[in-house]
Amino acid sequence: MNILLTSHAFLPQLGGIEFVSATLAREFAAAGHHVRVITHTPADGKDALPYEVFRRPSARQMARLLQWCDVHLQSNISLRYLWLALLMRTPSLVTYHTWLQRPDGKLAWQDRVKRLATRWVTRNLAVSDAVAASLPGRVGVIRNPYDDQTFKPQQHRAPSADLVFLGRLVNDKGADMLIDALAVLRSRGVNATLSIVGSGPEEASLRDQAKRLGLAESIAFLGKRSGPALARTLAAHRVLVVPSRWQEPFGVVVLEGLACGLRVVASGVGGLPEAVGTCGQLFRPGRIESLADMLEKELQRGTGPSAEALDPSVEAHLKPYRARSVAAEYLAHLDAIRKRRNPMTPAAKRP
Image (cartoon, rainbow, N blue to C red; front, side):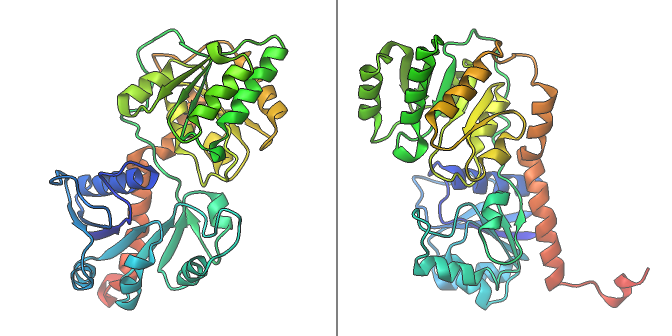
């Protein structure tokens, strides 16, 4: 197939949507399909990718690309790139990576227009059941992949800390609740250690909070890490904690931790329960005592990550999220909508 993938955010930016879009484009090309990508993200040099990337194309260039393709895949809805595809009646599959509403739950005019556009798209998919349930009409689900080449059991290392947090240091991610839960554990006689991986505007206040609670020596702020260095860091811990206040649409960070052999304790919000499955514990959102209870339960399990292999139940949980598996699901949907444009000839329909 000739596949046109539009992703407002793309490489060289690094983020969830950027990773998913680049992963799908790479897997489609590896499977023998012709792939072109449209994005609004500027380049920081020459693209050395196994597919062409068109950055900030004109409407005329977009029209030519839409004429070229058999199918159009939009990674997260963007009216900038969708309107022309709808006008030209190009078979289009749109994936929704997040909620079509403001953080306070209200709908702005852009959200209303995007919700209306879902009626005219050939097929709609969401990255979790939670996101799908928030959208109008019939919406399928394909959950996001993780980088299974990077995040996997690492060479055996003694855990450097019990718990690890990975994410931006902002209120929505709940790192402050995790520090409070650590203080609760200490009051119960459980002296756990924590590594905080990431950066953000709340780092100074989190450091102050740790000092105020007498936990400064138990908490290490490691800054940003990515790729193999991040995988090694995760594998040196026992439990990954995802204490989000925000309704996470899915939670690839959960898959990364599980793939490195960690158990997970996460907030029971949004799509996080789907990412965790039966491979960890969920706590009541915003409840520090509940978080402390789940952490204590996981810490009592004892051993850390294995260097040899994952637990079979974790391996089974992760299998559908490997890049090749997710790409195959997308290709099945794309082939189905392509056939709607190019139906079989009468001769081909005969048994």
